Amino acid sequence: MRGITIRNALTIDVEDYFQVSAFAPYIPREQWSARACRVERNVDRILQMLDMHETKATFFTLGWIAERYPHLVRRIVEGGHELASHGYGHQRASDLTEAAFSTDIESAKKLLEDLSGHRVKGYRAPSFSIGESNLWAFDCLERAGYSYSSSIYPIRHDHYGMPDAPRFAHQVRAGLLEVPVTTARFFERNWPASGGGYFRLLPYAMSRWLLQSVNRQDRQSAVFYFHPWEIDAGQPRVEGVNAKTRFRHYVNLHRTEGRLQRLLADFNWGRMDEIFLSNSANAPIVQTPELNS
Image (cartoon, rainbow, N blue to C red; front, side, top):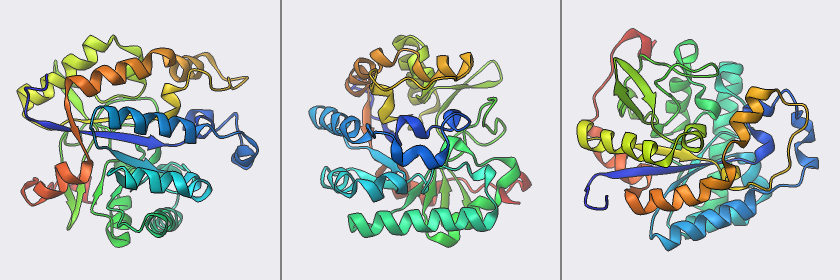
C-alpha cells in the first residue's frame, strides 16, 4: 500500500473514556474530576506508535484535558504533530446556543495556543455535531479564527450525520474549510470508512478496502479518526449502560491497537493542516442554501 502516493489524514480525538457523549446520561459532568484519568498513558502509547512508523497526525484535543495535562499538549507539539481543538468540555455543538458555542470554541483555542505556543487552525465538533440545524456554527468558527473544521459526517446515524453534505473538503465560509471524515460511496449511499466504532466492528480487511477505494477511485485523501480510549481494553466498565451503548463502546477494544499498527503500515499518513490547507484555495466553494444558511 505504501506505493499509493495519496497521503491521508490521521486524526485522534483526545478525550477520556468517561467523556464520550454516549456516557453522558450515566456519568454526570460534575463527576469527571473524581474519576481517574487514563488519557495520558494512552496518548503516550499513541505517540510511541506514531514515532515507530515515522508518522505525523492531528490531535483534536479537549480544553478540559489540556488544562489538566499541559505537558501532554507539549509532547504532542514537540513530536511534530498538529494540535487542534475539540472544544473545551465535549458538549455537542447541537446542544449549545450560538453564544455558548462561541465561548466554548474561543476559550479552547486560546487555552491550547497558550499552552503550546502554536496557532490552532482546526476544530472538530464532539460527536460530529454540526448539521443542518446549526450551520451557524461555521460563522462562529470563522469569527474565532479557525481555518478548517472537521465536524460533519456525511452519513445517516442515530446520533449525528448530514448524509447530503459534500463528501470531501469544501469551503463553507470565506477562509473556512470543512473537511468531513471519510465515507465511501456505493449503491447511491455513503458508507462510513473513517474509523471510530466501525473500525473496531468491521474486519480490518474491510476497513482497508474502503480506504483504498477512496484513494484509488475518488483520488482523494481520506480522513481517519480514533480515540485514545479505543486502545485501552483495561478501562473501567461503566455500570448501568444500555446494551447498544455497551456494545458500541467496548466491542473489540483489545484488537484496536494491532489494527492501527497495520493501518499505519498500509497507508501514507499526515497532518490535517499539511494535507488540506495547502490546497484550500482549490477546494470547491459550496453555495447551496443548506450549507450557507
